Image 1 (cartoon, one colour):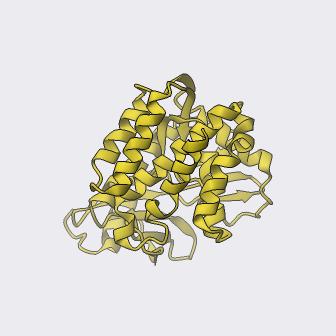
Image 2: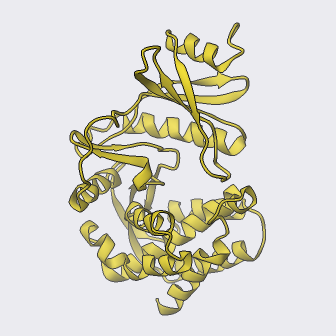
Length: 297
């Protein structure tokens, strides 16, 4: 757009009013990108903007826009998600602007049943299904992403693990997941649960991935537990964690192994280790946990 050389000018042109900005950059990782907090001249929250810096962050921003458009059609009872205010390009970079969720409202202690209800509600988006892992769209997508990652021992180990799991002929429940549901991507308020950062949202994944991700990330990031120990516990404790979804014990262990393979594939495909991410090398914790669990399976 003419006259939009600066990001402030671009935001003014698409929003129709002046905004002040503050910027947040997280810790080193491949998907790190500028996140702008947008404020009115009076200091009131006006929204958030994400700006891409490379092909990975461009694709993630586009994925989040598509996810939020999908979720906008849902009548959620247990959670609130952001609305897309604008999507476009500035200086060749992808821009996504979302409304500001009311995180300033009075906080309320998160109840386990509340979190379970919200995750269960989300899992039903697009419909729940049950069927064999072998030949499933999910397994095909996972293999495709793995094969697109850099060749090496980690990719080979994950490929062998997926071959073994597929050969077992197990059947699983499938549903939607947020993709990165953590304590720092949500807020529990007196008016309900607010959840943001939907760039990893996906349909048709093994049911329960969000439950497992929330627990594992809480352990390794917030509690700073040894990563391999936490990954082992993710598989060991999966039956209890997934019981609210009605998942049987044997199926829960298999879903947990697939979740660790999903996360490993993500780290390899994104090249998180090269970007300096603290837990970016799946060969040091996720893959050993997968191999240990498969020997017991």
